[in-house]
Image (cartoon, rainbow, N blue to C red; front, top):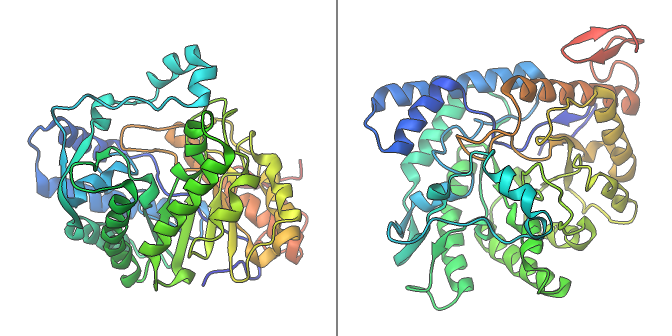
Length: 406
């Protein structure tokens, strides 16, 4: 198990902006246009190697493939890796859920969604045509092989949680949503095992756990929401049963949108449920200005033994590059509450929720990741003593280089 022993380690939440060469192939796939499959596989392999190199160069300790192997959104990719599920070409395109933010700021949402690469056709529904089973072995193995070939000493692959699988009409085959989700969990377990058996860290992405509150309440109540969240964690733990928790990361966020977030559930209402997941690393959004104050919850909330908190100390949703000293401050105050060895620096969410969506410019993404690593070094110096983070005594760090104290 990785812990911050001697210095604060840092990582990120998974999805990174696709390079132009890879994106051009993905656009052809998306349009159903013929393309050179051998050239695509070569481009994908090279792109993964390059993005791993750049993450390590930026100073990150635990890296991934940027989710470059997913041809569609972070969660709906799994719909293409299941038997018993087919695209519902006759059904209507998906619609954005009626969240509280959308209800309270309708003019904003009407303008904002059109600027984010949101394609209703991509959310066109799927339908169950028979019992669900997993058929994504070849695609998953390709992603595993590409990441292993990149040679990172510590690497993870992000995949979806059962609760965040969406857009599949299950009523034609399953008697209840729970029965459907348990079938999905059993299928996902095969994907999880492929990653873990390869010696990689598994990251389970579950944005819908916090986000569903924004959809359910009102008219539902907080108790309704918490009961829903508990049931979805139980289903996830069914998928994770007997798998090595010390190699499992669990990521939640309040949606990747650069939006008001006034309808978000408070972390105090969901963290106790989240900590029941059979995982050892908990990636929680904490740089979001709607949630940054929630670091104080850890004054009373106990991090279970053997767990590591990976707070988002860098936002994916703003082009402002956080100063390394702010990053260090966010890390140090949490380290004092949960133990310095139990904190790892992270990002709120991925920088690209799909191949055609990016929340910041690529150059800014890399600047933010460098600032994250530099802030972790500063925090290490404060927590373990000068030099622990690899900085000469008496020097401060700013974006991309050492510089005089400022």
